[in-house]
Image (cartoon, rainbow, N blue to C red; front, side, top):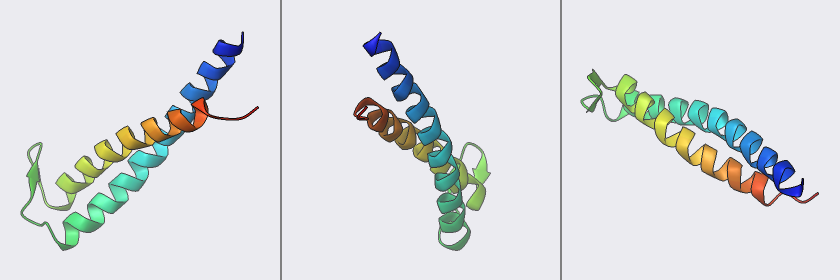
Length: 76
């Protein structure tokens, strides 16, 4: 029973971290791409759209990992 509860915390933490990381990464990527990397290309888009997509993907991944780790080491 203890491992199921722990897994639930890891899953919830990962999902919350994924959403928060994706939003934060998107906003940071759009800001950087719109001001500095206007010629950057990724997945057939340029500028702020490309860096926004890349930022959202990186933010979602790191947010999921950090959120999962926080859920894993949560104290009861």
